[in-house]
Image 1 (spheres, rainbow over the protein chains, first blue to last red):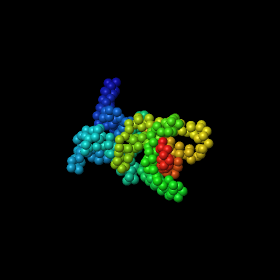
Image 2: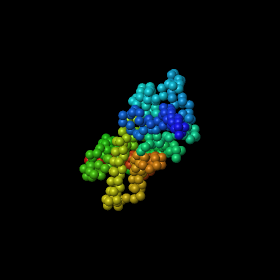
Image 3: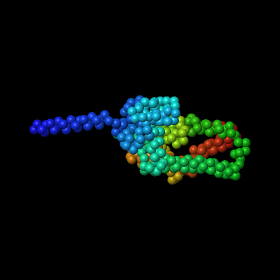
Image 4: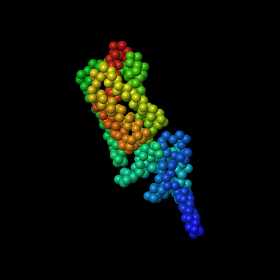
Length: 131
Length: 217
């Protein structure tokens, strides 16, 4: 009985540790609209599968920090798109919506143009209603 | 379905616009040549001032038909006005245009465009009802009239359903784009050609009435 109790406590502890580790690790599904960027969003929030993309692509294919035309971003640097791309027109930088669209649809379109299977390009495929 | 979407929103749009523009030019040229043969008199002492005045007078809501047929005139203005504004200033359309050609312009909030779409559909239903119930219109109606009505209505019905994601989204959005493309391509070859022929008839009538000094109305 004591042995079973000890085993139960250890296994529960291990399970809790795994859950905490999972929760604090890189987000798998990122609900971009829930971050409060847009005061009055026109379209439903986009849920971005970060882990899905991170498995297929190199970090620097999306994450960037351009300096004289060179991407000098490194893992550990700022990852949030909105940190540099403001919602309203940001001068030399694209506003946030354009940045999202250019990055996401741009890449999906380019991949499709190469004849490969790719991600969504139509509005409602990312901005899904009723979810 | 993705590749079908790529085709209808890519090459098919080009084909639709080119067909529309080429068809419009062709019809105008043919009409002009015909008028030179059959109706030379309109060109003698053509009154361009009166012609222009007549076009503007009939584009404005409060013209003679508004006085004689107020409901039909109002519904006509709602139908055409909302149709053009919704199609040209919808954010999704302008966004796609910007991605394709790099040009963009001011857009409407989606809620406003939604309202305009419903107004177009409501006005369209009014005209369908009128065509069925009004004897003077019913007696003149044939398939080509209903085709033109369907061509104009289809993009708005499918657009509304696609935007609200009613039904399978990709199917609806592809149907919407096809409906729009077909409407554009068919425009010069159906009674939808009144989009440009209105100006032709109105200018000729305006000039003729001007010659007789009875006003451009």
